[in-house]
Image (cartoon, rainbow, N blue to C red):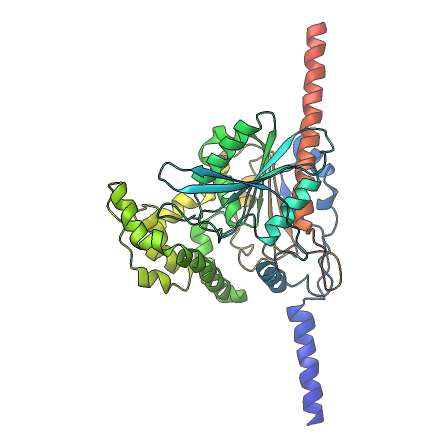
Length: 418
């Protein structure tokens, strides 16, 4: 009996240490893929964080499951609450888009004026802890931040038309960018997206390439790029992806239930009548019983978007169809132990950088999905490795671009003198 107990304890510790906590795994620098152009080499030279090992929180940071779980439940430890000003924009269909504007709390090292136009992940807003953490860090590094709040994501704000956000909606982001440009015409804009928000950022930039003229560079963090591939992967039981799918669906259901009346009830009927439009016919019971994002999209999302079927919706919503048209500097960041978006699904960044002289794909060994916790044995730092990596990349692009502009001025002035 004693032998059995001891053997069971040893077996449990083995599973805990080597299979769950993954403590045997060593920290390593990110794996980088890029064309060795002068621009990329100069940016990476200005970004030591990509040459140094990312060292996650000692006890549990090497577990993709725990990184992802802590991000999902906590977001960030002791996440700050930066003070911003909430703005509202009325869309042509009567829907209301909101975003929050956060001023920089320090001067940027370059002395310039920079604004990050940020898009959070699925069902998220600037009120989520990981978004608050990034905003506060960016402010402290000299950046103003305009953060889109996805339609329906704010618990204290009702929707004003019968629709919520979807994976590929770029209209709301476009309106925010227009307003930021009008309010800060001399500010240099930078585009940053997380997970689903990164899909929106890349799609926004690629579907109408002239929009890239507004931005110095872009950052895409933890996205899958091809939604059709992503939905297939999320139905796998490997690494508990089906469980993550279920949990994300339940989170989406909170948004839908909170806005039930405007989506399906009397407010929706009044809206369709006032706009002289035929109502969208839903099987509401089927929607509310959805257990995966695919089930929800089949019953609700593609109809709400006016697509002919779910495959048409996924094709139109995916950034993979537009990324090849992005020519501004762009960092794509994923983690090898992201169980929601595993590396075997993410082929788009590697293909993109083969023909993009200003594109960099960074794949960390650890980090999970939007975790990237670092520091401490049990309790990590408030500022994540992801936060530092994003702003260091932005700083690097700014520095290299300023150097290039200076060289151009010297050459042009020399020509004038001659």
